[in-house]
Image (cartoon, protein in one colour):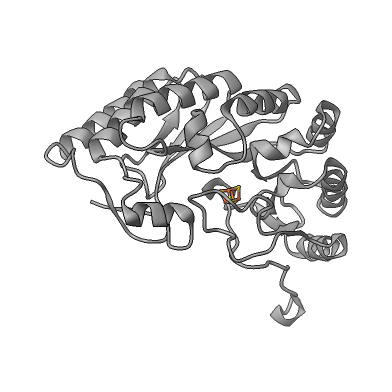
Length: 305
Ligand code: SF4
């Protein structure tokens, strides 16, 4: 087909996706994030949240049908597409299957908050429509940290809502943030977060470390010195304890974010000893810098070693 015939699918602002959705069709169903208040997040700060028009979504699906008719996985954009009401998500899922009949999985970013506005029957219906493997910023299992990050839910609510999601057959990937409790709280954070994940059983854990770009409250907290990052030693202690406490056979541990002190990945529990050895290898390499705090590049928060 000549390039001139291809109308661009509609995307508003910067489009984000998890690294493992590189081969998925990215379909915009909302603009921005309905919460947009997490202390550390600048992703959608300048965008006003609104659901995308169904007519626009259908136009985009018609176009996708032309150039990726055999696609099997769709990632719904943007920041927390699972905030949409169950009836609207069901309508979108039905449209996806009508235009792209080979799609098996429809996934998206979601928040613990987004599960609360859906009944158990809603969740089961959405699972029946192929909605699965949601990417959820769980971040921490500590109440005071969730409050500091301004996530909009408590640890108890995370236990309840993630449990309801799993009971409906919907798997999720848990993003967690080392160092989010700050120095001196690494052990507490590791224990609380591992306990939450052991109970709610994500199929994948995506690890990161706390960092902030200009334009969010955490940046100001860090700049003023009111919030201090952990040292390399504290990050290593937190990850070692967290990993050692996890008991999640078959769960994929994805720790390749450039913001991480240790970059590694593998399957739990099979590769746990190898992953723990990676932590010790980095500790040995940084043995004379364990009291230093990381220096980062802006953007993804990559650490300069
Ligand atoms: S971290 Fe996620 S839920 Fe929080 S403001 Fe950013 S996009 Fe929204």
